[in-house]
Length: 274
Image (tube, rainbow, N blue to C red; front, side, top):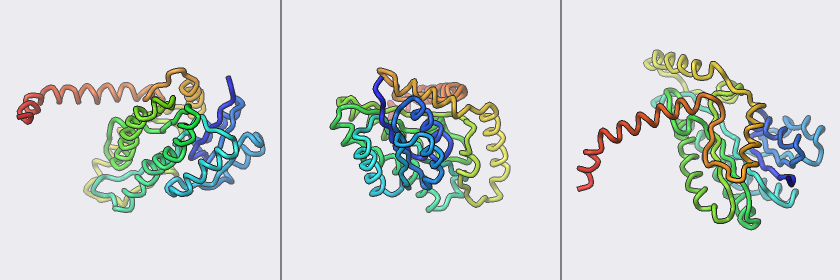
């Protein structure tokens, strides 16, 4: 199998770092972006020219286009573009400030959109490529206290499903990775939190208990790298794929409830038709 060239955002820790290492270990080349490229110094020492570290804040559209161009110019092509940069914001809907809501979308939605737009001309020209969008089980179901995070991932899911249809004729694949709970610092130092309103304290405690139960058996980020390689090496990769054991159970329960409600209210839907 020919070596592949990757462009991965958010590589300083978590999924991004593990996936970068896995790609390099199998002989691929990686353009790895991070806000602070010093976090990649040990990987540069180990893998040398196979790794191109790029300082990047994905919320900067101009910088996104420049970073993708730099990666393409350096390696001569792009095969796999991974939009991994993102974070979780904890806060009940009423607690969110305007800036908190905008910041969540700037990173999780617009950052991925700008990098995707920057990469597409190169992928179209070579008539091949694979765009990996890191979504979440939170991209198809929703829980208390992370509503704006859910909103950002649902937006990512929406434009990516459309994108998959638009670029299929160019032999470009799009895959949404939808992880459950993993042993990363997503809910720790990487997360941001709104100022709390006391009236939501009881509901917040309930939400935290439920979240703790969902992540009681967290996935291994290193194992996720093995799963990602299965996806990118597949002849016909999926539009969506869960990472972890729990997401399928959560999704089935949620979608069964949706179908039941839609069917129950179908007479009203018909009434609205006129």
